[in-house]
Amino acid sequence: MELKTVALILFILMYVVMIAKSDWKLYAIWFVAVLFTVLGIVERNLFYILSAVNWNVLMMIGGTMIVVYYFIESKMPNLLADIILDKCKNVMWVIILMSLFSGAVSAFIDNVATVLMIAPVGLAICKKLDISPVPMILSISVSSNLQGAATLVGDTTSIMLGNYADMNFIQFFWMKGRPGIFFAVELGALFTVPVMMFLFKKFTQSVEAKEKTPVTDMVPTFTLCGIVVCLIIASFIPDTPSVTNGVICMVIAAISVIYDYIKNKDKLNIKNAFSSVDMETLLVLCGLFIVIQGITDVGLIDDAAKIIVDAGGDNVFLLYTIIVWGSVLFSAFIDNIPYVATMLPIITSITAILGMEPYLLYLGLLSGATLGGNITPIGASANITAVGILKKEGYDVSFSDFMKIGLPFTLVAAGTGYMFIWAFWR
Image (cartoon, rainbow, N blue to C red; front, side):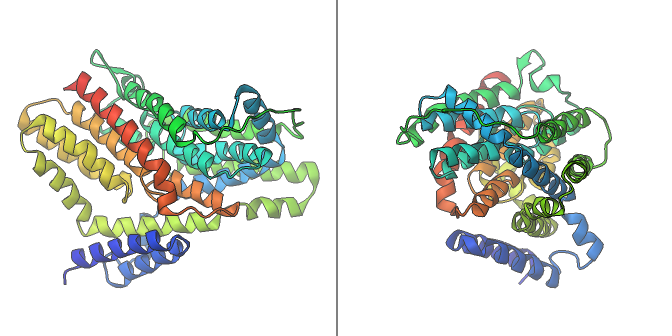
C-alpha cells in the first residue's frame, strides 16, 4: 500500500476518533503524527519536523495567554461585562454584540489573538449571569474566523493572497473600481445576526449591571492593547520574519511578568500566570501541524486542489462555485494555509489558460478557505483555542456541539460572500 493511501486512511481515522471521543483528541492527533514520522510520511528528520510546526502561532497563543491572565486579574473584563450588560436587554443580544465585537477586532489582528482577548470578557459576562459560556465563546470564535478575511492584516491567508497577488491594504476594500472582499465579508457578518437571533432565541433572560466593577490595575489593559497595535504595525512592514507576531506576543508577555514582579514581588502570581497557558491546546496544534505537513508531503492537498479545478473545466461560474464550496469543505478538516498556498498558483495557471483575470477566483478561494474552518472545532486555530478555553472552565465541546453553531454561520456567511463576489467580479 503506497504512503499516500496510508496517510489518507490514518487522517480519516484520526477524525473519526476525534468526532466519536472528543476527549481523546490530543492522543489521536499525536498517535497519527508519530505514525506519520515512523512510516516516513513525514520526513524522519528532527529539523524538518520542527520546521513543520507553526511556531509563530504557538508563540502568539502562549504569549497572549499570559497577558490575558493579568488582564483577567485586573478585573477589566468584569468592567467591560458590566458595560455590555448595560447596553443589552437580554442574553441573546449580549451574545450577538460580543460576536460582532469579536469580528470587528479580528478584521485587524490575528483570529487566535482576538479569541484570547475577547473570551475573558465573555466568560465574565456568563459568570455574572450564571449561564453556560459555550454559546458565547463559540460565537466569538466563529465570528473572529469569519472576519479574518476582511482585511490584508486579519488572517494569514489574507497576507498570503496580498503577497502573491501584489494587493495592498486598500485593495481589500476597493480594487479596479469594484468593492473588495471586505464588503463581502462584512455583508456576510451582517447576515449572521438573524442566524444568531434564531440560534439563541431561547436566551431571553433580562440582563442588567447593578454596579460597575472597579479595575485594580490599568497596565494589563495597556499591554493587551499594545499587542493589537504592534501586530497591526508589523503587518505593514515588508519582509518581516515569519515569527514576528509570535515574538511580539512573547516580548509583551515577558514585560507583563516583569512588571507584575516589580510591583507585587509575588512569585506565586508569576507561577499562576505561566500555569494559565493551555498546554493541551498548544500540543493539539503542534500535532496537527505535523499531520498536515504529512498529507501535504504525500500530495493529498495537491490532489484535492486539482480535483476542484479539473471539475470546473472551462465553465467560469462552475469553476468559481467549486473553488468556493470546495474550499469551504476542505478547510473544515485541513489547515487552510497549505491549501491556499497550493491553490494560488493553480488558479493563476487556470485563469491564464482561460484568458481571464484571476481576482474572481482569488477572492472566492480566500472567502471559502477562511470560512470553512468554522464548520468543525479543529478547522481553525481560533476554534481549537476557544474549545481549550471552555475545557479549562469545565465545559467539553463535542463536534456536534460546535457544528450546531459553526455550520449555520458558515453556510450563511459563505453563501452571502459567494453571491456578492460573483455579482461584482464575474
